[in-house]
Image 1 (spheres, helix red, strand yellow):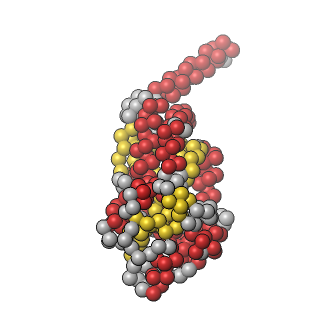
Image 2 (tube, helix red, strand yellow):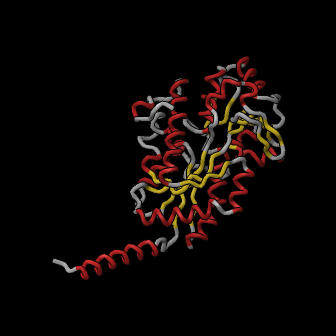
Image 3 (cartoon, rainbow, N blue to C red):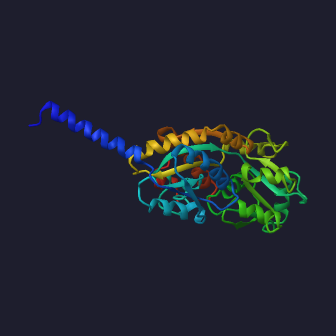
Length: 333
């Protein structure tokens, strides 16, 4: 039987090993997998955040864009990487809809939220020389010419698809949805005249609005929003019924596999909290119409579940879901 002294020494030794393990992480560069393509809102947020996280971690984060499958390509890549904290997912809201859209058999429940960085506001944009000056202008034109106008999309469950589904639930109209690997390529297509309209995160549209290349028809919110010095009306001005879905918007965060060791998670949470609260990053988020959050763990999980509940059931109610949220235990809001 071990003496009290021996047990104490053993406990101290184990504590020392654990402390060493935590202190040793990270001992090499990390990999950051960005869910969407270059130039989109998720990409912009990830690349703005990474330098601050690198400073806190003392190691470089090598960022790679892995778009496709409305986020399923990147989530599958990270879930199949070792659960050691060295592979980070820089993502957005899309995986919370993967199950009801049958894009994947899991969502963020398999990941640990290192940081929910902030939530954004969506804005509906058209090319600056287009004939539409309000969202109602566009919708009424689409009603007159069903299937003739094109909407840029990022695939099923993406922000444009979800906003389109919400709008269709309050006023029926028909457009052709053209998918792209992220908001950046979609905006490029809009500027080139290949699509007529696209709902995107404010962050992905702000510079083009400021430069006068696109017009903002409405923000998906209950109040007007100032973007690049312009007051953009809320969607509820033309469609008050939309208010039942608000507040709603995209969000951005950093995740690792949920089975990553707790001590490694703790290191990442501290580093990304420091990064997310860096004044320079906070300013960038606000300038792009985002609401900074910097939450992790239990609080972040609660936010994710609520967002999933509201959005999955919206898709179900308008017939856009391929499987009922009930099947996956997603409660009605």
